[in-house]
Amino acid sequence: MSQAEEKISPMAAKHAKPSLSHSQVSEMMKRLFRLTPSEIRSLPSYDDQNFYVAPVEGGEYVLKIMNAEDSKNLALIEVQTYAMSFLHKNGLPAQTAMPTTSGQLMSLEELDCGNGCQKYLVRLLTYLPGTTISKAPVTPQLLYETGKTAARMDQILQEMEHPHLSLLQREKFIWSLSNVILLEAYVHLYDGDPLQEVVKSVIHQYKTSVVPKRSSFRQCINHGDFNDLNVLVQPDESDGYRICGILDFGDMNSGYYIHELAITIMYMMIEHPNPIEVGGPVIAGWESVLPLTEVEKECLYVLVLSRFCQSLILARYSVTLQPENKEYLMISSRKGCHIFRQLWELGKEQVEKVWFQSAAQFSDRK
Image 1 (spheres, one colour):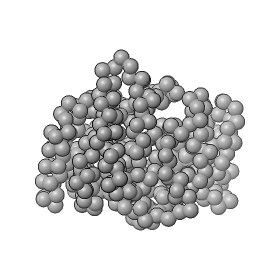
Image 2: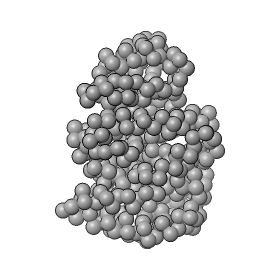
Image 3: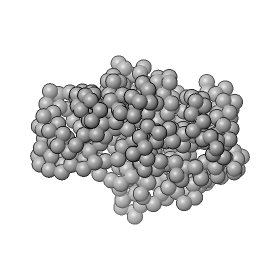
């Protein structure tokens, strides 16, 4: 998920997504990178356009064409691109950007995708083989590794220095867990849906039980979208899976460690046969790197519910802008609605009991 809510207007957002043809991609690869594609195939994306490209010269790449609105944020994307490289240098499996023939890591291209000429930011990223964690058997051990990786990632990002780091503040960025209250402007999208009352209740709990405690949270830089489609895995030697890729840094923002954990738990629930059991091993993995404070533990349940609210509401909003992309936009929402309701009905005390007892047991076995 990208900066969907930093659009100028709904109409601008509606026509911001690029739609290049394969011939345009081929021309761009030759002109910008002196590479001749032997294979090009489209990859799914929320509001950008991604292509897998295998050139005759060798190697495998992802050509990423940013949507026209986000392409205006050159300095922000520069920070995101640098962060990927910084994680890669520090031992985490993130993509890195390939330089153009002029030595730049990105190029602003003026293209006509059927809505008149617009400028789109283009990057060629290394291709990471693997399958999304959404398609792998999500064992407790893999969930533990996911929590551990998320914590290590935020720990490393906190050490990063860059002249434009302040741009990650993103005060009105609606995907930030600091900005859950901004969802109130979109609650009407659930008019007539019984889930609307649950959404309103969660936002109220966020206001009353999370916001007053936020000053006690430990600050960091969040990846912000550590979801089941942005984490790649490969089979390991012990018949399990290991994490081999972290994708999509478009939602990076200045936040708090507990936000990343809440986001990770929420998305790892989506494909799990028993979603409530996800929290324990993810928390255990996280705490093997960054033990939680009592205040962070106290707010985790509401923050997980709050991320569900963001995902469900903003997917519904995005469908109004891109009805033709409904299938991809609603991936998390279909199962998410059921899990969200289940979490809410079980209640904070019961869910926390499952999560923290399981986390303690998992840690004891390590």
